Image (cartoon, rainbow, N blue to C red):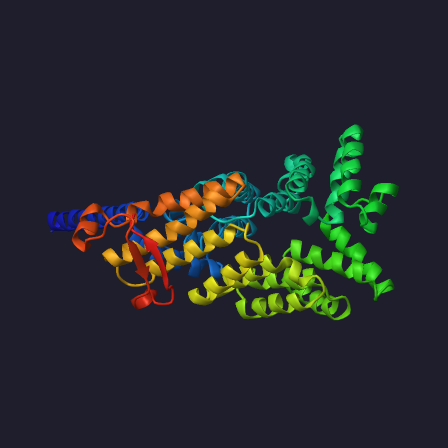
Length: 441
């Protein structure tokens, strides 16, 4: 009896050990599968992370997002969306963390994305705004002053870097912050030189000139303090459109969407401008509200000075249609953007991207499908040869290099009797909306 009990115990132990081994092997196989890059797995992994991300499941979304960033960082819209979500994911994990060490670790991971993301996106040929990434890095550091106290001395320098990229986009508050940072670091000579630059760059801007000329000492170390100040001033001066416009910009910078939309309605009624409409339209577009974004962009064209930003308006309307899968409509807008400014080579790249997307969504990959990549390459080549901006040239060249391996092979061309230089029309089947011709390469 005793021996039988011992044998049963041994058998049970063996079964438990075998079960543990199989579980371990299964987890290893799953990890290995996720680590391998397979084009067929891209939509699935993207869907898995996107769904969890949308529902706040940052921990479960993380491995799939990492896979996407490794294997298909520009999927599905060749934008910086996946990288932006990577930052938001780590910030979300930091918010949920219970101990300071874990919270800081996640914030350090988010900062690493800010530091390395632009270079990675450039290599991947992804569309992104360097100014936005630089500015948002400064805001990130400033927003986490409590958790990252030793990095606060870098904030002013980051904002200065953003100013150097595009000074016209930086609001008065941040200009003020840069000066304050220089002064507190006892770099008064640098502060004077910087203010000289600002006077030239913002000549005619009364608000900025007041800051430069008087520098009354009303400096703010946090955008939240600036918001409180502006809100108190608006109570006293409810018809001051400039105060409301600056507060609206701060709401948008701080991603306070509800407050921003509420203020936007007020400002658009009292002080409507084409630029304001475009700003709100971009916010709607970023939030995925493409219908309202298109309406606002179209309305901006009817306001004074609206036509001056035609290339931007048409381009972003094209992006909105592309996000909804309306490729033909998107192309129409991209061509209008190019018509408004023939040097706007980003529109050429966007059209090439549309044709690549068309192939990916057509459901087949025969010789004729591969030939469509020749037409996409035509647009990328035009962009590379006509742009005077090295970053855009490299982006276009990277696009060609990324699709070259999909061109019809020598065997394909022999089978179809295609000779280099022959005209090839892309106007059939699911490509009928394209209606353009290319040449056999």
